[in-house]
Image (cartoon, rainbow, N blue to C red; front, top):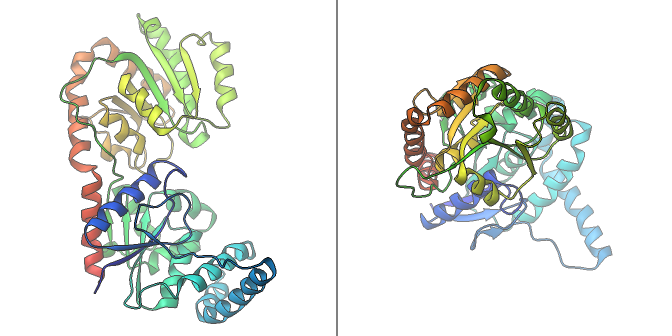
Length: 394
């Protein structure tokens, strides 16, 4: 059977690392002979990817009539799929907008989806994966695969646990960003035999030696409670109290969020203003530029699926200090960095002190982290593992 793949995800330039993952993996799978389609995603897909969501180019009244007609006729077709979901209370009234758009997209796509079937790859176990489930049921020869980055399990599941449990139980296969997310999926209804880790990939630059870097410590992420940037700022104050050459160190905060004003006020109140720079949100390439010249990256999150920003930092030979939560310990081990308990800013300050007190001692960890990421986080490896999963389903 011809290898057909329908990808339900966003593409660049819409978001960041996740969309880049789909873009690059689609490119590589296309080279392996896959015919790739997209439906409903934002951004610009790779060249050659076929868009299934063609909207009719007619006058407004005709388009309105066709819209209503398509929704009604497709609702009739999807009746046997939707009614059990309604009866089990997996759908809510607030889902009506999603369901209407799903019905429209399915109606428009059905004439273009190959009869022999293929794979539907959906991003996250959330309401959008329900679309993948409906599409597979409607077609009859499509296999349902979820790519779980963590948001569906760690965030959406808190709001809609039964819907997430249902979607995980219905998926023909699930691939996750870390063993931690695998365990969370299994707890919530996924079949352990049909689940596998495929790491979040990235381009790893060829860096032969440890480059000369500036005395810069980075935080890079949303300035929101789950990323706990407050612990980073508190650790800076503590660090200044214990490190004798603290004035030579520059601390940088990359990102935007609701905590930014509070953090800036803390810095002013504690006379940290000259040592802490808030860059705001930056394009991903500019964030990488900071990593290229910085010695340390700190990730103090209280919730983290895998810590993708850590792999970016490791790829540019930054020393990583992170909170011991979620999937982070799979990446940051004693041989590749340092861990601290969430919220423990005093230990974080001590770890920063230890690093700058004896940088030579930490070089082997920086190099080990770089080698680990280079060996395990390539797009080629991610595409190969997906291909292996898909072959099991054909």
